[in-house]
Amino acid sequence: MTSSLFLAARYLKPKRAFLSVITFVSVLGVTLGVTVLILVLSVMTGFQRELQRKVIGFDAHLTISRDGLVDHWQKLIKPITTIPEVTRVAPFVQGPVILEFQHRRITPVMRGIDAEKEANLKKFIKEGAFDLNDDTALIGSEMASLLGLQVGDRITIYSSRNVNQILEELDRVKNGQEKANVDVLRQLVLPTELTVAGIFETGRYQYDSEFLLVPLHIGQELYGLGDSVHGLSVWTQDADRANLVQRVLRRQLPEDFVVATWMDTNKQLFDAIAMERHVMFFLLMFIILVAAFGIMNTLITVTVQKTREIGILKALGARTSQIIGIFLIQGMVVGFIGVATGLALGMMLIRWRNEVSDALSSLLGVEIFPRSIYQFSQIPAEVVPSDVTLICISAFVICSVAALIPAWLASRMDPVKALRCE
Image 1: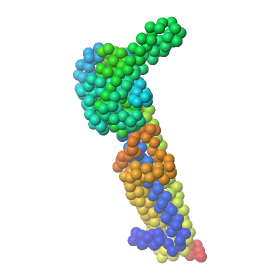
Image 2: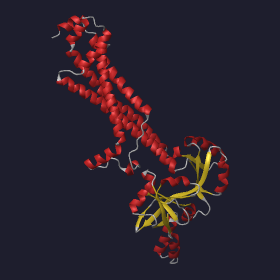
Image 3: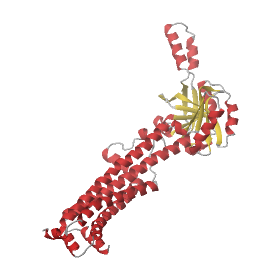
Image 4: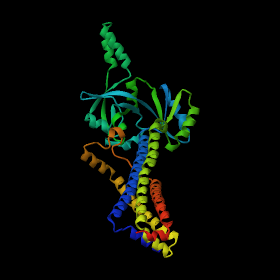
């Protein structure tokens, strides 16, 4: 093996410039393949896990609702909290509203909550305070930026629950049936004014741009629910075991109640990310396969050019395993260097991914990572050691197998015919 290592090292630094170039290209191919695989899989994993954290942090682990309103919801809370896995239960009201500020209007999703039972949302407060008492509200950072809202501003909220009634009254007024209906119309569109007590930022664009948090009683007033609510939010000890609690709740609650976990609500999104992650792994592995063919091509070229030397080695008594070792070690060294540099470059790009994205956006004049599409303010990434290990080992094995074929061909040469080669 000592002689094989010595000759392999000599062949890796050939005098011919052409061989040096194709060896460099082979190493570069492996480097790029490993870099792209590590970067893509880490970003995909980051998307999946960061999205999971955002969803669980802002939404409940389970939601209980029905086609109509949930009446006498206070009586439902006690039996639900007796389930060992359940930690807390809170009522909620949720639906679209019209928000007006300085003659600008948008249609966010209003969520009426019990601030004491959903104190976990305090961690998202960016400005102001987590204050949902009387006539206050919390808005997302993207919504605040869009409307130019600040803590202490007054906003006007119109409920969409009376749209059909409003249209009916407008038709009557238009037809001149009853002039008194104008007063009824005014009552239907009577708005609610709220003070912005705080601005929250979850890091997910959808929540920060579309959600408005208000006290539970304000939500009930806007939708005219009285003491009823739209549903109940349930939190468990372990979010990943929410499906077990779901089965228990389905047995306890009447059939017209719908129990959904956070996994059910976001199933299509998480399934799509998982599928894309696996597909990208197999597709990008072909980059390494192409690089392996480059290594094979390099070694075949070396084999042809070193035919006379191989003949001399075999005539001097070199064993087949020694001849194979020369070219196999050469390919393994190329693969190792490519994997090592690809790992270093991949980890570096993951560390500076957002800076690189901003630089490319400035250089090309194109937004590389649109927040409105990907729903994150920055590119998420999470390195999974098992994934990185699998990538590096797979790339090294592929390169070694690619080197084995020309090494085996070199070992099969007839020394007499090899020595005749000029």
